[in-house]
Structure formats: structure tokens, C-alpha cells
Length: 186
Image (tube, rainbow, N blue to C red; front, side, top):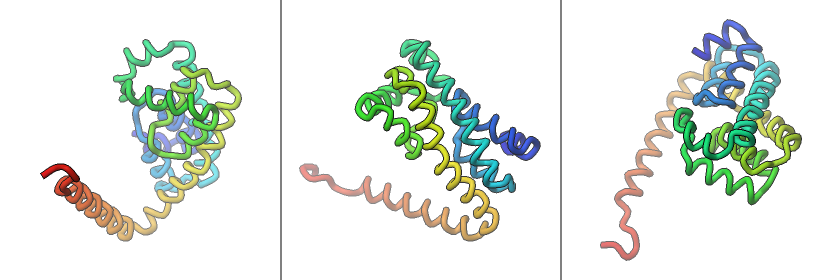
């Protein structure tokens, strides 16, 4: 769906896809941006239009947190795969680090953008620093994902081998973790 949107509309497709991803639609930004890189959208277009779409989408999330509040998020968040513990953790992180939490949240792909945006609104992080940190934070991530998408197409076999190796390593790690005897347990 989003690959078709991006391939048909290019820059504006990237903008719309990232706006939707950052505001309300539960899709992974990684798929959108790597996909755009894979289908040949120019790197600068992905970064510029992706950053603008992501930032405007984040503003929607901020407004939801700020004006609709926690009861709204708890009631309707499940429809967007936002669970109360996601909000609680990101809200605590926002309270602890303030506006820097926005920048860190954008750089680290641990929690979806929309959760940090909503938490920023809930904790009343000032709007202008929120927007600036969002814009700065999404650029490196967009760049790296777009380059990955472009390289994945060029080196399909290598990417497939690397994915299989990573999957096997992860499976072995989970197996080891499950089989490991913890101290105090027999």
C-alpha cells in the first residue's frame, strides 16, 4: 500500500506515508523509508519530505497528548497499538530528560514516534523545542534507513544471507537464555 503510494507520488507519497506513520497509523517507519530507498526515490527527497511528514505527524500526536489527555489515550490507544505501559514509560522518560527525551526518542528505534509525541504533549514539553528536536532527530534515522533500502536492492543476496544469520543468532540467543539456569534455581 505505502510502496504504491510512494512509487506513484514520489516525494509527496513519502511525505504522506511518514505523516500517517508518525500521527495515527500503526505502520513501521522502517518499512516506509527503507521501501522508498529500495524503489529508487532520491535520498534527499526521502530525507526532506520524510522529515517534514514525520514532524507534522508528530505535531498531531503532541496535540492528542496535550489537549485530549491521558484518558483519551488510554481509551483509544489500543486501536493504534499504544498500550498504557508504553505511555507510562515514555512519559517517565520525558519527565526525566525533558526536551532531550524527544531527540533521544527520535534517534533510538525503541518506541514508535507517536508514543513519544503523545507523551511529550502529556508532559507539556514546550512545543517549539519539541518540533525542533523532532526534526533534528528524524533526519539521521531517515537517512540511514533510506540508504539501507537502496543497498538492500543492490545487494539482495548479501542482505538475505545477513538476515538469515541474524535470525539464527537471535534464535540461538533465545534458546540459550531459556536453557540457562539462573543462580538460586535448580
